[in-house]
Image 1 (cartoon, rainbow, N blue to C red):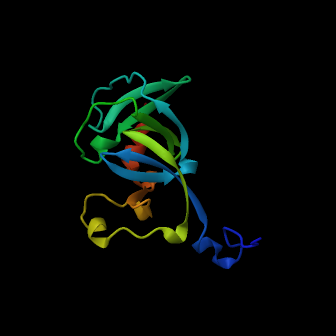
Image 2: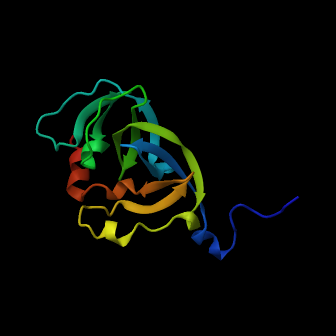
Image 3: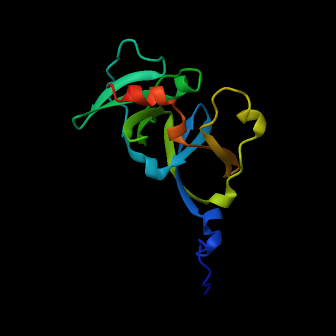
Length: 166
């Protein structure tokens, strides 16, 4: 019987800690966000449209008495729109202390990986000037590349402040 721990408990543990990600699909690509940011995953409800909001803001929903802004991830990433399916979900996440919903094509699974398995994104992608600073790394998952995002870095300070207006 092996006594080897999955996560090292020495000073090197910070370099190889166990990370849990919620993976989701968006335009045939797989993305992941830290599981601790996710509050819940819901089916598509009726979304109330709001006037004069950025094009990626789909609208708002009422979730158990709390008004939550809903962001279209496809629009945010300038991807082609598609019809919602029975797999379409809204991931409710904590973005800098504000609950925000993100429309994704489907939610896949919770993945446990070691931080040492995460590779930095290619510098060409990061230097493209398209606001890619929220991409924190890439993970080779089942012969596919999973793009790891830091949801807190996806929006500017002004955009995050505007979420509080809903």
